[in-house]
Amino acid sequence: MDTSDVEKQIKNIEDEIFNTQKNKATEHHIGKLKAKLARLKAEIEKRKSTGAKGKGFAIKKSGDATVGLIGFPSIGKSTLINRLTDAKSRVGSYDFTTLDAIPGMMSYKGANIQILDLPGLITGASNGKGRGREILSAVRNVDLIIFMIDAQNINQLDLMAQELHFAGIRVNQKKPDIVVKKTGHGGINVSFTVKLTHLDETLVKSISSEYVTNAEIILREDITEDQLIDVFLQNRIYLPAFVVINKKDLINKKDLYLTTNNIKQKGWDVIAISARNRAGLKNLKEKIFSKLKFIRIYMKPVGKKADFDEPLILKENNTVEIACKKLHRNFKEKFRYASVSGPSAKHDIQKVGLDHVLKDKDILTIVVTK
Image (cartoon, one colour):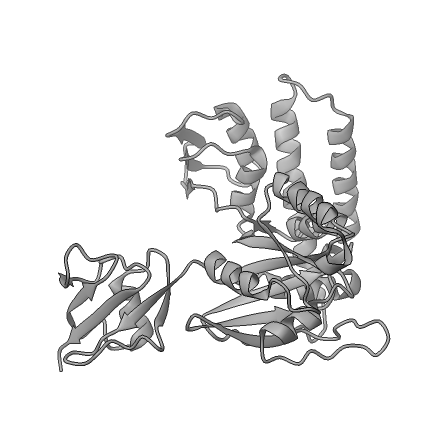
């Protein structure tokens, strides 16, 4: 089936969904249609990406994490990244729009955080408009997204979030806790460990039948039909994100309060700054550090003092084993024991194993065989 035939099918399904009255009697039929629609759109996207040509943004990830800074053109991203990092963004002489993806490194609390100043994201980016595919491909590889908007144009936030959603990027969501085990026979069997409020067994089977013929499906959390479809498509990326309102100096305090409150009511975490005036940048750095869920571990070699100047940067709930892997490739194999003092220790100096979960500001000594 060629692309035009698939696009025709997509149009017909979209029309049928739009024209079908939504009620209890039709929810299973609509659920199956949505599953088929998502499958066909994914097929179209795969064909386009396979045939697409262009250099893209060849950016090597470095540092402890990578943050993607996205926003509409001329929003002030280049100014902000130059304030936060050692990058020098190239901007057009007329429209002040970044011409390429510019990486910069921000150092904060011992962490080295790579921040990407990406070209302006515009409406239609998910369909390739304005180098959209390249931008969104870069976004899929970051650890945190910052949506940058103008204080006087907050509608830009919904437009950008929509483009990311169309591109399979799910912001501030976790991957649904669902197990799909394909089997050779027996059809589709569904079980769940929690009460479902959005789905029932029949609807789960209707949606699943678009992707599998024989499978054991276990739902371990209450999810929507869209989340179930996402699980089967297997190309979704789940990333944390927050909103930065730039140019706060250009509106009065009352309007800024109303704008910030409006965004918060939509479920977003938001911070207001002025990149030009360097206002709010300390709070922004702290927000980035917090959103990345970093913890600082102070290493103490045997018989020496702890190094409080250059901490080992890990993530929340990381273990001694992960610390070993980050420090040296042979540490895990040669590991004897570790000693910890600080927030995660039960007493002053606790002897622990590889599975010990570390906390921020722990002091860690690792003892290995020679």
